[in-house]
Image 1 (cartoon, rainbow, N blue to C red):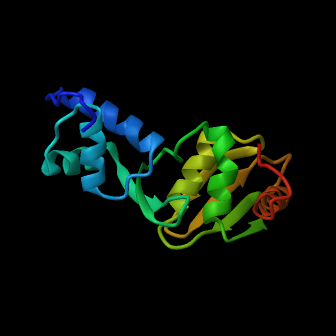
Image 2 (cartoon, one colour; image 1 turned 30 degrees about the vertical axis):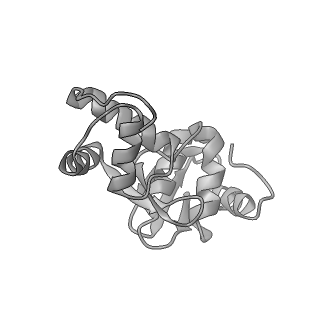
Image 3 (spheres, rainbow, N blue to C red; image 1 turned 180 degrees about the vertical axis):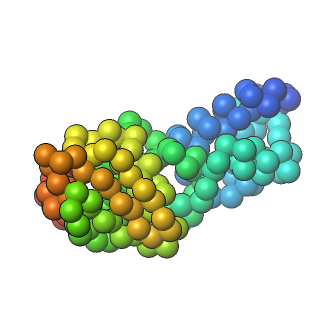
Amino acid sequence: MTGQSRVSVSKGDRQQALRRLLGERDLASQTEVREALAERGIDAHQTTVSRDLDELGAVRVRGSDGHLVYRIAVDPGPGNARARVDEVVRQFVVSARSSGNIAVLRTPPACAQPVASAVDLAELDGVLATVAGDDTVLVVATDDLGGAALAERFLACLAGDASLI
């Protein structure tokens, strides 16, 4: 603890603090989550942290260093969503192909949701919607862009040649 006194707070305030923490830091375990809350003066038992993580929809995904960390399912991580979409795509997407007006992105198992969330939150030009499975994201392109051009944008991003935004 950093000198702050620990107090009990309302569930809403505690969950709001937890949401902020997961957006600011890579926390890999419930113990790390409890310690981070304690640094902010919030006392929470392990069962409370577990319940809060579940209620907030937190999932464990690969962080920037490759280790599993907690993220809110719709949150691509620290920073602005538009600025982070390239990083998330480069971290998780392993290939991109197209069919009609759809770009098909492949990811490692359990990594499709963070990609779909990042693409949705970035509100990319020419993207209508995403659908995520376990290891596949379908990105629906507008008619004027088309799936082939959208897949090419993702491939250029993966190669580091261009940004999606």
